[in-house]
Amino acid sequence: MDLFITDLDKTLLRSDLTVSQFTRKVWNSFKLPLSIATARSLKGSLQLLQGLRLDWPMILLDGAMVATREEIIQIQGIDPELAQTIIEEVDRTWETLPLIVGLQGGQERFLYPERLNHHQRMLLAKYRNDSRLLGLKRLTPLPHNLKIVYLGDEAPMRSLETFIRQKFPVETKLSQDPYQPSWFLTILHPKADKAYGLEILQELTDIPIQRTTVFGDSHNDLGMFQKSGQAIAVANALPEVKAAANIVLPRTNDQDAIAHYLATL
View 1 (cartoon, rainbow, N blue to C red):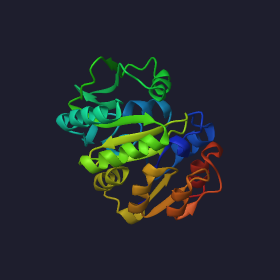
View 2 (view 1 turned 120 degrees about the horizontal axis):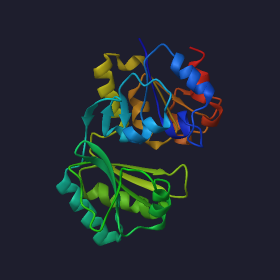
View 3 (view 1 turned 90 degrees about the vertical axis):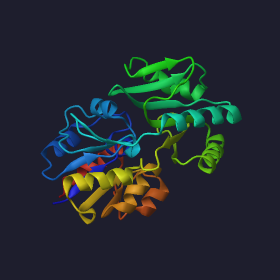
């Protein structure tokens, strides 16, 4: 049996964050195991994928969580003490505060500080009515900190990534926001990566790595590209992602690239 896993943003999802009727039909009739690997949270993913069969465990928050609709199977969080140290040292040196995505009492939380830059304000405007949002006068880490996220222009985010990598035992992901003119610097547990999440899925499903096909478009997909049996990039993928792929599809995410490929199998 084969396992198929796809990224969401700019891969399975159209650029307006919708799933087309064609994709919905192909997905729901597909006979083999099919799941997702995304930087989004469980709640956010389920909201975007309403109407899709999601019968297999999902890789979420860039690999910091593996879960089904009903159950969190595994999480890899940043220790609260380490998270606090990172926040304080970065603010002291760079005068910037992050957003924090994590769990509190089993519930998803999206913490943001009182002091925001314009990149953060743009992002938060899209989450205005989200029940996960919690603004804090003094940003304090959660019991389970799954992602610490800084937003800014490319050059300072690259410099900040170098600073964090040199000082702290964490995983970092730097990528351009596909929906606004910002760059994300995401800080994760060292084992929080889509590639690590892929290993967990393979243990849960008992499907060997050689029988796994993954789809993606961006930097945070490269780890699972290297781990999988077959890596497939959509036509709109970044050049380095296309270079790492076994197959580059002729269609983009807005042309339902993944669904058209699955429909041929």
